[in-house]
Length: 163
Length: 102
Image (cartoon, rainbow over all chains, first blue to last red; front, top):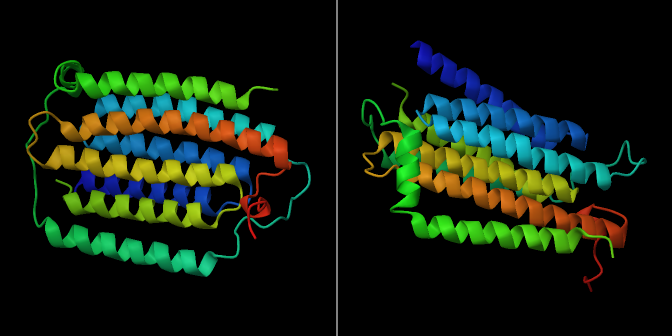
Protein backbone atom coordinates (compact mmCIF):
# COMPACT_ATOMS: atom_id res chain seq x y z
CA UNK A 1 0.00 0.00 0.00
CA UNK A 2 1.81 3.07 -1.23
CA UNK A 3 1.30 6.52 0.22
CA UNK A 4 -0.81 7.63 -2.73
CA UNK A 5 -3.16 4.68 -2.35
CA UNK A 6 -3.50 5.35 1.37
CA UNK A 7 -4.32 9.02 0.72
CA UNK A 8 -6.86 7.93 -1.88
CA UNK A 9 -8.64 5.66 0.59
CA UNK A 10 -8.64 8.38 3.24
CA UNK A 11 -10.12 10.94 0.86
CA UNK A 12 -12.63 8.44 -0.49
CA UNK A 13 -13.85 7.53 3.00
CA UNK A 14 -14.14 11.22 3.91
CA UNK A 15 -16.09 12.05 0.77
CA UNK A 16 -18.46 9.09 1.13
CA UNK A 17 -19.11 9.92 4.79
CA UNK A 18 -19.86 13.56 3.92
CA UNK A 19 -22.16 12.46 1.08
CA UNK A 20 -23.99 10.14 3.49
CA UNK A 21 -24.58 13.09 5.84
CA UNK A 22 -25.93 15.12 2.90
CA UNK A 23 -28.37 12.41 1.96
CA UNK A 24 -29.43 11.24 5.39
CA UNK A 25 -28.91 14.23 7.65
CA UNK A 26 -31.89 15.44 9.64
CA UNK A 27 -30.87 19.08 9.86
CA UNK A 28 -30.80 20.67 6.41
CA UNK A 29 -28.13 23.21 7.35
CA UNK A 30 -25.91 20.34 8.48
CA UNK A 31 -26.56 18.67 5.15
CA UNK A 32 -25.45 21.82 3.33
CA UNK A 33 -22.23 22.03 5.35
CA UNK A 34 -21.60 18.34 4.68
CA UNK A 35 -22.05 19.16 0.99
CA UNK A 36 -19.20 21.67 1.35
CA UNK A 37 -17.04 18.87 2.78
CA UNK A 38 -18.03 16.61 -0.09
CA UNK A 39 -16.99 19.22 -2.64
CA UNK A 40 -13.66 19.77 -0.88
CA UNK A 41 -13.05 16.01 -0.81
CA UNK A 42 -13.79 15.85 -4.53
CA UNK A 43 -11.37 18.73 -5.18
CA UNK A 44 -8.65 16.81 -3.32
CA UNK A 45 -9.39 13.75 -5.45
CA UNK A 46 -9.06 15.88 -8.58
CA UNK A 47 -5.62 17.00 -7.41
CA UNK A 48 -4.73 13.31 -6.98
CA UNK A 49 -5.81 12.82 -10.60
CA UNK A 50 -3.47 15.55 -11.91
CA UNK A 51 -6.40 17.90 -12.61
CA UNK A 52 -5.26 20.89 -10.60
CA UNK A 53 -7.17 23.53 -12.57
CA UNK A 54 -10.39 21.61 -12.08
CA UNK A 55 -9.74 21.27 -8.37
CA UNK A 56 -9.41 25.06 -8.08
CA UNK A 57 -12.52 25.61 -10.21
CA UNK A 58 -14.43 23.07 -8.12
CA UNK A 59 -13.63 24.87 -4.87
CA UNK A 60 -14.34 28.32 -6.32
CA UNK A 61 -17.60 27.54 -8.05
CA UNK A 62 -19.12 24.75 -6.00
CA UNK A 63 -18.05 25.75 -2.51
CA UNK A 64 -17.89 29.48 -3.11
CA UNK A 65 -20.97 29.79 -5.28
CA UNK A 66 -23.44 26.97 -5.23
CA UNK A 67 -23.37 26.11 -1.54
CA UNK A 68 -23.70 29.79 -0.62
CA UNK A 69 -26.74 29.93 -2.90
CA UNK A 70 -28.14 26.81 -1.25
CA UNK A 71 -27.62 28.27 2.21
CA UNK A 72 -29.42 31.45 1.17
CA UNK A 73 -32.33 29.43 -0.13
CA UNK A 74 -32.42 27.37 3.08
CA UNK A 75 -32.47 30.57 5.09
CA UNK A 76 -35.31 32.02 3.03
CA UNK A 77 -37.48 28.90 3.08
CA UNK A 78 -37.05 27.55 6.57
CA UNK A 79 -39.79 27.32 9.13
CA UNK A 80 -39.24 27.66 12.85
CA UNK A 81 -41.32 24.58 13.62
CA UNK A 82 -40.59 21.02 12.50
CA UNK A 83 -37.65 20.13 14.68
CA UNK A 84 -38.76 16.51 14.67
CA UNK A 85 -40.27 16.34 11.21
CA UNK A 86 -39.50 13.43 8.98
CA UNK A 87 -36.79 14.00 6.39
CA UNK A 88 -37.38 10.81 4.43
CA UNK A 89 -40.66 10.15 2.68
CA UNK A 90 -42.53 6.88 2.32
CA UNK A 91 -40.59 5.49 -0.59
CA UNK A 92 -37.47 4.55 1.34
CA UNK A 93 -37.56 0.81 0.68
CA UNK A 94 -38.12 1.04 -3.05
CA UNK A 95 -35.53 3.79 -3.51
CA UNK A 96 -33.00 1.88 -1.43
CA UNK A 97 -33.51 -1.16 -3.64
CA UNK A 98 -33.22 0.97 -6.77
CA UNK A 99 -30.07 2.75 -5.58
CA UNK A 100 -28.48 -0.53 -4.46
CA UNK A 101 -29.32 -2.16 -7.77
CA UNK A 102 -27.79 0.78 -9.62
CA UNK A 103 -24.64 0.55 -7.48
CA UNK A 104 -24.26 -3.18 -8.13
CA UNK A 105 -24.75 -2.67 -11.85
CA UNK A 106 -22.21 0.15 -12.02
CA UNK A 107 -19.59 -1.78 -10.03
CA UNK A 108 -20.12 -4.83 -12.22
CA UNK A 109 -19.70 -2.70 -15.37
CA UNK A 110 -16.57 -1.02 -14.02
CA UNK A 111 -14.98 -4.33 -13.07
CA UNK A 112 -15.82 -5.95 -16.39
CA UNK A 113 -14.74 -3.41 -18.92
CA UNK A 114 -11.43 -2.02 -17.84
CA UNK A 115 -8.96 -4.61 -16.74
CA UNK A 116 -5.65 -2.89 -16.10
CA UNK A 117 -5.37 0.63 -17.38
CA UNK A 118 -2.38 2.61 -16.22
CA UNK A 119 -2.37 5.68 -18.43
CA UNK A 120 0.38 8.10 -19.34
CA UNK A 121 3.07 8.76 -16.75
CA UNK A 122 2.40 12.45 -16.52
CA UNK A 123 -0.31 14.68 -17.93
CA UNK A 124 0.70 17.98 -19.50
CA UNK A 125 0.17 21.20 -17.56
CA UNK A 126 -3.58 21.25 -17.52
CA UNK A 127 -4.32 24.97 -17.17
CA UNK A 128 -2.71 26.23 -20.42
CA UNK A 129 -3.77 23.04 -22.16
CA UNK A 130 -7.40 23.48 -21.17
CA UNK A 131 -7.28 27.17 -22.02
CA UNK A 132 -6.06 26.42 -25.51
CA UNK A 133 -8.58 23.60 -25.96
CA UNK A 134 -11.49 25.74 -24.82
CA UNK A 135 -10.63 28.54 -27.23
CA UNK A 136 -9.78 26.48 -30.30
CA UNK A 137 -11.39 23.06 -30.48
CA UNK A 138 -14.20 23.65 -28.01
CA UNK A 139 -14.94 27.28 -28.85
CA UNK A 140 -18.52 26.55 -29.89
CA UNK A 141 -19.56 24.74 -26.68
CA UNK A 142 -17.82 27.47 -24.72
CA UNK A 143 -19.92 30.20 -26.35
CA UNK A 144 -23.10 28.15 -26.07
CA UNK A 145 -22.49 27.64 -22.36
CA UNK A 146 -22.01 31.38 -21.96
CA UNK A 147 -25.42 31.95 -23.51
CA UNK A 148 -26.83 29.27 -21.23
CA UNK A 149 -25.42 31.05 -18.20
CA UNK A 150 -26.91 34.34 -19.36
CA UNK A 151 -30.31 32.71 -19.88
CA UNK A 152 -30.04 31.02 -16.48
CA UNK A 153 -29.21 34.29 -14.77
CA UNK A 154 -32.08 36.16 -16.38
CA UNK A 155 -34.48 33.31 -15.68
CA UNK A 156 -33.48 33.03 -12.04
CA UNK A 157 -33.93 36.76 -11.49
CA UNK A 158 -37.33 36.74 -13.17
CA UNK A 159 -38.50 33.70 -11.23
CA UNK A 160 -37.32 34.88 -7.85
CA UNK A 161 -38.23 38.54 -7.78
CA UNK A 162 -40.97 39.87 -5.58
CA UNK A 163 -44.14 40.60 -7.48
CA UNK B 1 -0.38 3.79 -9.16
CA UNK B 2 -4.00 3.80 -8.11
CA UNK B 3 -6.06 1.49 -10.33
CA UNK B 4 -8.79 3.12 -12.38
CA UNK B 5 -11.48 0.91 -10.87
CA UNK B 6 -11.06 2.58 -7.51
CA UNK B 7 -12.17 5.91 -8.94
CA UNK B 8 -15.01 4.35 -10.90
CA UNK B 9 -16.33 2.52 -7.87
CA UNK B 10 -16.09 5.67 -5.76
CA UNK B 11 -18.03 7.53 -8.45
CA UNK B 12 -20.63 4.77 -8.49
CA UNK B 13 -21.06 4.94 -4.70
CA UNK B 14 -21.50 8.72 -4.75
CA UNK B 15 -23.91 8.49 -7.67
CA UNK B 16 -26.14 5.91 -6.01
CA UNK B 17 -26.11 7.93 -2.77
CA UNK B 18 -27.31 10.89 -4.83
CA UNK B 19 -30.02 8.79 -6.46
CA UNK B 20 -31.22 7.60 -3.07
CA UNK B 21 -31.28 11.17 -1.77
CA UNK B 22 -33.14 12.52 -4.79
CA UNK B 23 -35.77 9.84 -4.46
CA UNK B 24 -36.39 9.91 -0.71
CA UNK B 25 -35.79 13.38 0.68
CA UNK B 26 -38.81 15.54 1.36
CA UNK B 27 -37.18 18.94 1.32
CA UNK B 28 -36.87 20.31 -2.22
CA UNK B 29 -33.50 21.89 -1.47
CA UNK B 30 -32.19 18.54 -0.22
CA UNK B 31 -33.27 17.03 -3.54
CA UNK B 32 -31.24 19.71 -5.35
CA UNK B 33 -28.25 18.88 -3.14
CA UNK B 34 -28.53 15.20 -4.08
CA UNK B 35 -28.61 16.18 -7.75
CA UNK B 36 -25.40 18.17 -7.26
CA UNK B 37 -23.89 15.06 -5.67
CA UNK B 38 -24.79 13.02 -8.75
CA UNK B 39 -23.22 15.60 -11.06
CA UNK B 40 -20.05 15.56 -8.99
CA UNK B 41 -19.83 11.78 -9.21
CA UNK B 42 -20.08 11.97 -12.99
CA UNK B 43 -17.37 14.65 -13.09
CA UNK B 44 -15.11 12.37 -11.07
CA UNK B 45 -15.62 9.60 -13.61
CA UNK B 46 -14.80 11.89 -16.52
CA UNK B 47 -11.64 13.21 -14.90
CA UNK B 48 -10.52 9.71 -13.95
CA UNK B 49 -10.90 8.65 -17.57
CA UNK B 50 -9.02 11.77 -18.70
CA UNK B 51 -6.12 10.60 -16.55
CA UNK B 52 -6.05 6.94 -17.43
CA UNK B 53 -6.97 6.80 -21.12
CA UNK B 54 -4.71 8.26 -23.82
CA UNK B 55 -6.66 11.39 -24.73
CA UNK B 56 -5.17 13.95 -27.06
CA UNK B 57 -7.24 16.88 -25.91
CA UNK B 58 -8.07 16.09 -22.26
CA UNK B 59 -11.70 15.75 -23.31
CA UNK B 60 -12.68 14.39 -19.91
CA UNK B 61 -11.53 17.51 -18.09
CA UNK B 62 -13.17 19.82 -20.66
CA UNK B 63 -16.42 17.97 -20.17
CA UNK B 64 -16.05 18.27 -16.40
CA UNK B 65 -15.68 22.06 -16.80
CA UNK B 66 -18.93 22.13 -18.71
CA UNK B 67 -20.63 19.95 -16.10
CA UNK B 68 -19.62 22.38 -13.36
CA UNK B 69 -20.90 25.34 -15.39
CA UNK B 70 -24.24 23.75 -16.17
CA UNK B 71 -24.66 22.60 -12.57
CA UNK B 72 -24.21 26.19 -11.43
CA UNK B 73 -26.86 27.48 -13.85
CA UNK B 74 -29.23 24.68 -12.91
CA UNK B 75 -28.78 25.28 -9.20
CA UNK B 76 -29.59 28.97 -9.63
CA UNK B 77 -32.75 28.37 -11.62
CA UNK B 78 -33.83 25.44 -9.42
CA UNK B 79 -33.49 27.49 -6.26
CA UNK B 80 -35.46 30.35 -7.82
CA UNK B 81 -38.22 27.84 -8.51
CA UNK B 82 -38.05 26.59 -4.92
CA UNK B 83 -38.41 30.16 -3.68
CA UNK B 84 -41.50 30.64 -5.84
CA UNK B 85 -42.84 27.35 -4.50
CA UNK B 86 -42.33 28.48 -0.94
CA UNK B 87 -44.13 31.75 -1.61
CA UNK B 88 -47.18 30.01 -2.96
CA UNK B 89 -47.44 26.93 -0.77
CA UNK B 90 -45.62 28.08 2.40
CA UNK B 91 -43.75 24.77 2.43
CA UNK B 92 -40.83 23.18 0.61
CA UNK B 93 -41.73 19.58 1.40
CA UNK B 94 -42.45 18.05 -1.96
CA UNK B 95 -44.98 15.54 -0.71
CA UNK B 96 -47.20 18.33 0.60
CA UNK B 97 -47.36 19.92 -2.83
CA UNK B 98 -50.05 17.81 -4.42
CA UNK B 99 -52.48 20.21 -6.05
CA UNK B 100 -52.33 18.36 -9.33
CA UNK B 101 -52.93 14.91 -7.87
CA UNK B 102 -56.33 13.46 -8.44
